[in-house]
Amino acid sequence: MSLKDRISEKTIQESDLEKEIIKRVKKMIKTKAYDLNPVFNNKEHFKDKIFLIIKKEVEEYFNIANYHIKNEMIERIFYDTCGLGILEVYLGDKEITDIFIQDLEMVIIKNGHKIFLGQVFANMDEVYLIIDRIKENSGKIIDQRIPFLNTDLYEGSRCSIVIPPVSDKVYISIRVFNCLDFKIDDLEKAGMFDGKVKNLLKYFVENKQNIIIAGGMGTGKTTLLNTLIKLIPSDEFINIIQDTPEIKPLNHHYARLLTTRIKSREIDYEINQERLLFETLRMKADRIIIGEIRENISAYQLLQALNTGHKGSFSTIHADSGFDALTRLETLSMEYRQNLDNMMIKRIIARAINVIIYLENQLNGEPDYIKRKIKEIITVDKNLTKEGEYQLTYQ
Image 1: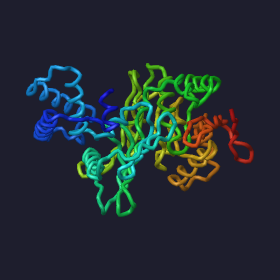
Image 2 (image 1 turned 90 degrees about the horizontal axis):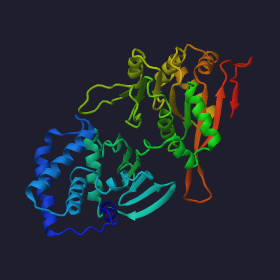
Image 3 (image 1 turned 180 degrees about the vertical axis):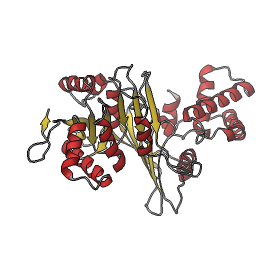
Image 4 (image 1 turned 30 degrees about the vertical axis):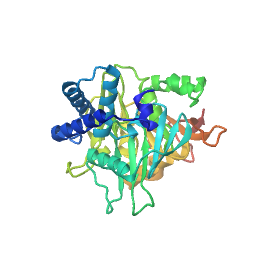
């Protein structure tokens, strides 16, 4: 049985020696980690450096001959000292997409199935310890005056926390960052689309169509976006703008990643999508990718950029249908450029956007089984009708 299984099932029985080792190494880490605050350093570097410190101290001060016991101990100490406790078990499982915590209880979504794990924490102190570590790493505040926290964890997962008095319990929702390794064949096997749609998606990317991926929360927009990026030729320049580090173009030599920053106790200035899009337009880029269109100014400026030669660009947007994605782009753009009439905005959108892909979660015959699926693929003609409406073709 692996260490992670033993943690998740709470069957670890530590000897007195193991407890002493954990206590000793925790004290050492506490005195040495003052300059390793992940707010100021690369988060993966922070994790690796702390792990090496633990490994060095265990090997130097304690003679543990058994290789597996030693590595289990190092991993356990890391989880307890610097990680997120039992959450590390589930964050490392590539089959898990979502984690929901309500006080001491946990629900996960694994392979599309909702699984109620029941009580996984011994007491609320464990829960609040995890919240404190998330808070410290984010540089943000959460307390009774500000009982909300939205941030990304050190490995990229999105996290939302709500605590009393605005809620009756502590609620932690985590969207697990595990979408990087999916290739287009993986998503076909998972049932997101069939072979015909797979070939259509390949055609869109190869022929540099500007694509908007639409859908509700948790429908797989970022997962599909990452997968489409893998289809881009590796010699093309890609500029990627994102709010959280969800997009990582693996094995792509010419990708530039730009991430927004919010104002916090440690960072006294904000860098938003508008500023990053302005900067990326000054850099050579064959394609521009925005993780999610949220701001009205970035919506309008992206449309302008797509009308000036950046073909084959992608983005995502929250919407209830493919057509609703177009109307959301209209609304956001008109909020920014109020002097433009609706007809002019529609013309700009029609010339900029070639394809809308709409995703939704579908029940797959079982009450607790959810499947992410492409519901609509819409191609947009560059010209409006005489009545000023979009000419749409549903694939």
